Every structure is written in structure tokens, then in C-alpha cells.
Length: 232
Image (tube, rainbow, N blue to C red):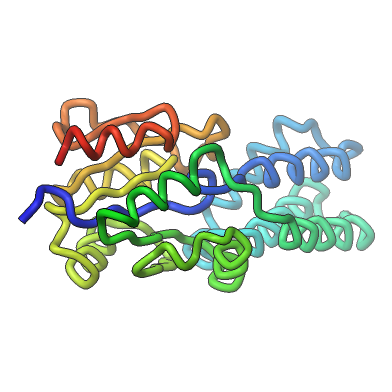
């Protein structure tokens, strides 16, 4: 059996832009609440709310909007105008309508890998929104399997790689999140390839497993085929 038989890709900010829409909405949020609190304090409170709420709302735009509303109520001591709540709901709807823009080399990389390996998409977030983005990306037909999960844990990856491939030891996960895409896969004996995006959500930050022989970092997806040739 060849060393690598399965290559899995993350979606948001690995194959297409995503985080920048959150940043723009946070700027809009800060502007709406500027009469009540400083932007830095507001963002810190929002991050706290997002961390608290992941277990209930999961990842994605809907949970983000609910966390903004919760934060607005808190920082205004329940005096936030209904018009601001309406603006936040509208901002979330705008995010859900954003067109998909692929990142550089994304399409070429997936196509190249699909010619030689079993290819998966493993992403987390809202089911309907992730399905929409995949459909609009034009990449859907290139994947042999798609998994939209609530959290990316070692157990989750082990289950997926056992079901779709030859186990984690013959699988690679490629993504922009050290915490979700790299570390848990390396922990179960797979390859974790970090592709930095430039905009990082604080919740997804984690130390790199620098000493792990199956950890790699590449500048962009254009370098993936060469890395695969080196691994074999």
C-alpha cells in the first residue's frame, strides 16, 4: 500500500474566503455599539460569548449572530434598541448571501490530488450554509466524500478516515486551523498540513506540533502536489 491514500481538505479559509466576512461584520457591530462601549472591550466580550456558546450553537454564522445579540444586550445593560438587533440580524443575512471566492491554487490543488488519491472535504459549521458554499464553489464533484461535523476531534477524524479510507496512518488533513485541522490528525498518526490564511480566529489558535514528523507547513495550496510527491 502506498504511504498516502487519502487527502482531506478543510473548507473555510482553506479553499475559499470566509473569515474576512466575520471581520467586516465585527466592524459593523462595533459601529452600532459605539455609544455604549469601546471596540476592543466589545470584541473581547463577543469572543467570550462565542466561546461559551459553541457547545450550544455550534460553529457558523447563525451562532455568531446570536453571540453578537447576546453581547449587545450585556454591554448595554439590556438597553440595546430593537433597531440594533434588527441590524445585526440583517448583517447575518448578508453574510449568508456572500458569493464564494476560491483562494489561490485551491481548484488546481484539489483537481491534482483527485487524480491520484481518495479526496475528502471535512468541515464544521452550519449544515445548510456549508452545503451552499460547497455547491457554489464548483468543487463538489471533485470530492469522494463530504463530512460536515460539529467539532474536529481526534475521534472524529479516526472515524472518518476508517470509514472513507485506509485509516489515519494513510491520511492527510490540509487546512488553515492548527487547532482543528492539524493537531488532532497528527495526534492519531496522520499527516497534518498547515496552510496559513492570514486572518485567524482566536478560538482556532494552537501551538504547532513542531517535533511531529508528520507535521508540515506550506505557504499556499500550490505547494501541496510537491509535498505529496516527497511523501509518496
